[in-house]
Image (cartoon, rainbow, N blue to C red; front, side, top):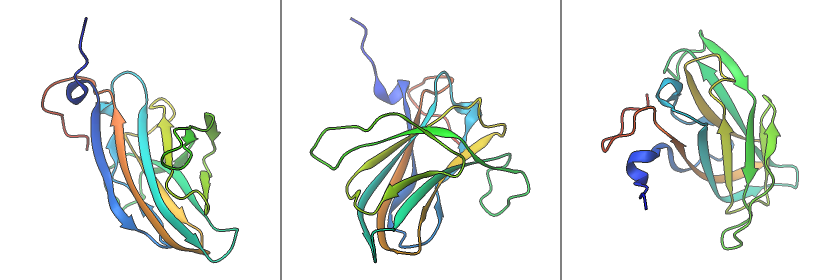
Length: 166
């Protein structure tokens, strides 16, 4: 029986450290799509507590595409692109939501979705640019947003030492 060595077959890249981003739009690091082999790029965005002043508060996740790996410029920015996503139920319930099409305007995670994971799937063919990143934006009603993110993909060339994803 063939054994799967996850460290060589799937590249996992931390793209956002655990942080309380409060009500600030926070981008992850860019991922170079030329490093992605077959399949899709997946962002795993983990939410802890999401606090809001009222029931309308939410966190919106969008995917941006760019020709340069530079968060300080938008000169070559394609803007936001479409994607698919699934939202888990809370920790310990072992349940995933349905696969849903995410518009370029993003996917909203409501303020009662504490301790959930949003899995975002990006098809490299959809992005006409070389790099993509997730942008996590709490609405003005949000008073606390504990979040972190990793990116996963099957690399073009699997090997024991992962290639740089940037």
